[in-house]
Each structure stands twice: as C-alpha cells, then as structure tokens.
Length: 217
Figure 1 (spheres, rainbow, N blue to C red):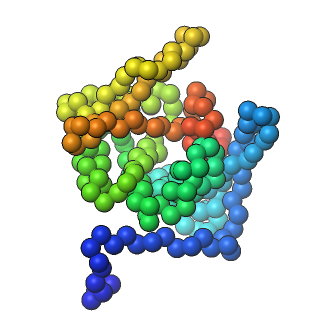
Figure 2: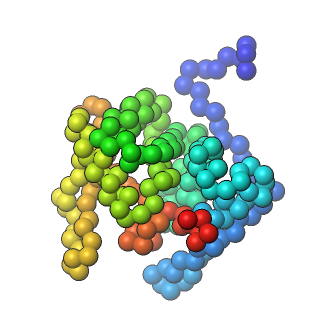
Figure 3: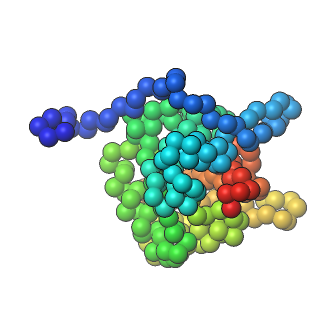
C-alpha cells in the first residue's frame, strides 16, 4: 500500500488455512506397497472446485488466464502427501514464507532451443530471493511432449541444461530409457538434480502429478 514501508528482505507470510473452505473430492486412488489404499485429488477435482466458485469456466480458461491458480494447485497437491516426502509437505504448507516459487510456462516446447535461456533468466532471478522453484508446464501432457521438452532444454546453447545416465539404473525390459536432467547454477560450481512430476503411466506413484479425468482431454 502507498506510504507503508516494507523492511528489506520482507517475505509476506501465507494466511493460515481456512477450516471453512470446502473439502475437495479425491478421485485418484493409490495402492501403496503394503496394499493400503489412499485417495488424492485429481486435476478434475481442483477444476470442479474452481468452476463451482465461478472463478473459471473450464480447463482451457484455467490454463490460459489463471496461471497463478495452477501454482496453488501444485502446492495444495504436494500437501496431500502423495509424493511421500515430509519435507516437501512442510514447505508446501506455507510456500511463500518458505520461499518456494512456482513458475508456470506455457508453450514450452514451441520455444525450441530458446527454452533453456528463457528459464535460465527466471531461475537466475529467483535465486536471489527464493530457496526452491517449481516450473510447471501445463501443456506438456504426453510421453512425446516430455521427450520434446527435455530435448528443447538440452539444446540450450549455454550448456546449462543437460541429460545424463550416470548412476541411473537401466530398464531391464528395454521398454524405457531413464535419464537424469541437470541444470547448472549461475556460479557454474554447482549442479541441480531436476526432479520431475507427470501424470503419464511410466512415472512412479510418488512422482505422479494430479492426473486429469477423461473429460478434461
């Protein structure tokens, strides 16, 4: 607000959870290693909530006009525990206070070899004020899209994005190729091990993102 000073380095805290918010449906059923079943929200459950509130009209509207809500969906989904990572769950409870930045990038594959530089600028800028970043690609939804995405990143002329099979166990069936995606930090002295999430079947359960429903395609 005009006239209100903000201390240097001030990070606006997240509001406390509102117990009166409606409970989302949990359409995704997961069978754990011990045979127990748990349910988590699907993308359709989040979309249904926003449509019922009159915030968006459909998935296309959500993706193209309300990218900030996509970041909120991601953080809420992390808090549900499907990742199996308690550390991530704690960070996602108050992502802004914990300096976790969501970056929503549309049309990523169409950027071609320029995608790496585009993301480098955003990530480098975030490095001065954030501890973690999540890059979300709403229109990368198939196995083929993921391959194109990785190829686009690794064609970055700066060489800061690259793939490797070092230390990665190969698929004995020969049906899959496992690769590790890496990003070199601005200092050129450290490398980030990129962790990916997707709703494609090949992803392990703890690396699944909220799956779409059939009517969302």
